[in-house]
Image 1 (cartoon, helix red, strand yellow):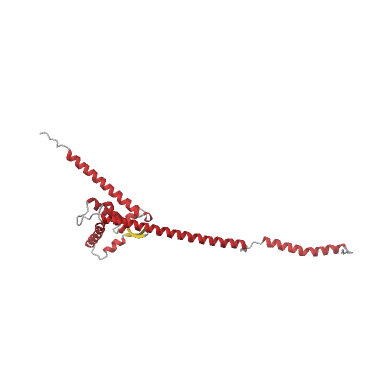
Image 2: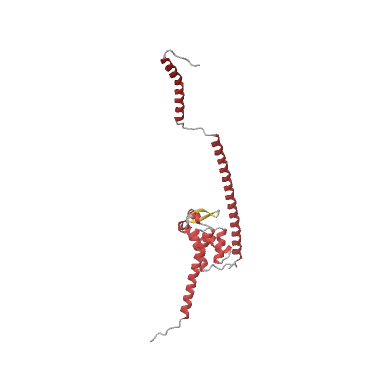
Length: 236
C-alpha cells in the first residue's frame, strides 16, 4: 500500500536510508572483487586435473626407466657375447711359445701400453690378439712383463717402494661400455672419456697396425728394388 508523506522531505530521507545498505553492500562487493589475494583457492576440477597429470608423469617415468634398464641389460648381454667370441678367436691363434713378438706386434702393443693403458682388460687383450695375430695369453703376458719391467726400472732410478703406486696415480679411471678401465692421460687428451669404447679402441689399434703394415711393405719393396738393380761398373 502506498504511504503518503505530509512533508516531501521525509520521503527523500526514507529513500536515502533505504539506499545506504544497498550502496554499502555494492561497495563491499566491488572491494571483494578488486582485492588481490596472494593465494587463491584452486577449483576442484583444477586439483583433479593436476593430480591426474602427476600420476601420468609418474607412469611415464617408470616406463622410461624400465625401458632404459632393459636396453642396458640387452646391450651388456650382447657385449659379453661379443667378448667371448673375440677371446675364443684370440685363443685359437697358434701360440709361438717363447718366440718373441715380431717388430710390428711389439710396436702395436707398446703403443697401447704407452699411450692408452698398461692394464687392458679381457676384451681389449682379445681385440689386440686378433688384430696383430698373436695368441691371447701371449699378449696378456707381454703387458704383465712390461709392467714388471717398468717397476724395476723405476726402483733403480728412484729406490722407493711406491713404484706401482706411481703408475696407478698416473692413470685415470673411466667407465667404458659399462665397466671400469684405467687409461693414460694422453688417451683422454686425444679423446674424451665418454667417447672411449671397444669399437673406438678397435679402430685405433687397427689403424696403427695398418700403418705399420704399409710401412713394412714399402720397405720390403724398396729393398727388393735395390737388390734387382744391376751393378754399375765404375770406370777406371
